[in-house]
Length: 325
Image 1 (cartoon, one colour):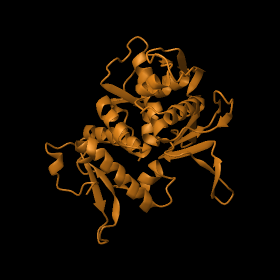
Image 2 (image 1 turned 45 degrees about the vertical axis):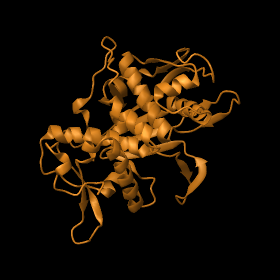
Image 3 (image 1 turned 90 degrees about the horizontal axis):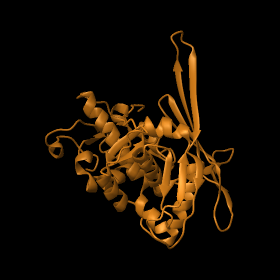
Image 4 (image 1 turned 30 degrees about the vertical axis):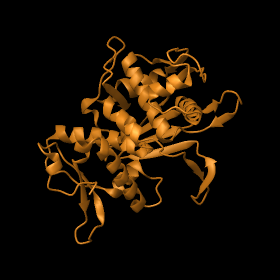
């Protein structure tokens, strides 16, 4: 499962910003590790979820581990102090917007619309007061989050190497949001940390089409659906580049470990995965046509996992059971 999609990563630079509005970007790190699809909860000593928000979230993928640690934020008006992790569809869309804007700007500084209406329009989130307040809450949580990535390996002498990198997402923020006002005013500013910009945005920004992203974002309420589309885009691109015809099955257990550890069972994850695939198929049918649904032999309809296929002239006519069947 730890297959990189780095083949088509865009190298950004301050001297050559990417300005094509038809191309958007998402960090490879979160394509392969995802984000919390719902607000994580702390667990007690027995492992049972509590009602308290978790301040750390961890995900493993092969020999790599991603840990997100919540930072303290202060909400305007009430001066309420919170320590929360970014989560859900709004968090995914904000990370997508942050990465895209930074690549296009060619630097870590991003100017934001001052009015809530203008900012939600830019991020492609439908306007209403609840969305406005939740978007600001998730934005502040996102920028305050610390990222730790750890890779396990061995040197030529067989000695274990543990390589860890750490950074916060936002180094400096100046946020002023108003309910009314000119949607073109940009008085708010976010400066990403140089480490996040250099090591996650510049080196690992994976491009994809803006139009498909916007269509899917408008049609789904699911963070998992958006993350699955991004993952499939990257993995299927790698499959196409590899030229391998007989690809292995990715088991539901492997998929759940990477994308759905918060689900109570593999069965529930599988059901949710297939529902997300059907949502994607309504927007990007040719992509989903390349995802085979593999049934375990001799056990009727028990699903074993998925197999990804290279492009064919008529992918929709492929002779295998598709994930949406």
